[in-house]
Image (spheres, helix red, strand yellow):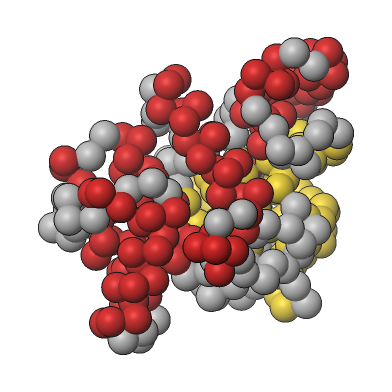
Length: 270
């Protein structure tokens, strides 16, 4: 491990959901319609664990992330980061979404430094920390570039660096590579593996891709409509590479098992 990466290691906390429910209300014509996005969901992500959540569209995966990030309050149950219930945005978590949401008028360095600025960290200190994380994601030669000058994959690296710069104890990732082409997606998966192996931050990762979940995760939660249908341990050695997984017969067994579980989940009645 390089000295630079070693300095970047941070503490991690567990994340736990306890009978978590979420109900949305909308108006259709003159009627109020209730949609049950989550129903009595319980699970735990251990400190330093990388857990992916997969499931059909509309099953509640992103709702879990928004609740964990403090962006939505559940209608039932609770979600805790460490011993504390999440009741709003906090410094323990950082979130990477499918769109990096960069400010077009700020450079790469200034985008990464933004949450540090909001946190009241002094200009010199936040610039130094932002530069560290820009380097960590492999963009130190692009610190002065603007988002329009970057590829989609590079923009997502900036989003990842911005999230990591606050040194979260739980990193939430909501389909962060969903908008990337296949090659960029593979590169970002490799980068995330490299970074996580050194930092060991607790990660909750939302994805539709079974192969991505297997490559990255210690464990995979399979969701149906608003419920967790199964938990599957990914008992493959680390550090991992795509080539290693393709040559391991256990990978095919895991893919087949997860595909079967997803098929069952997709048929779950609303």
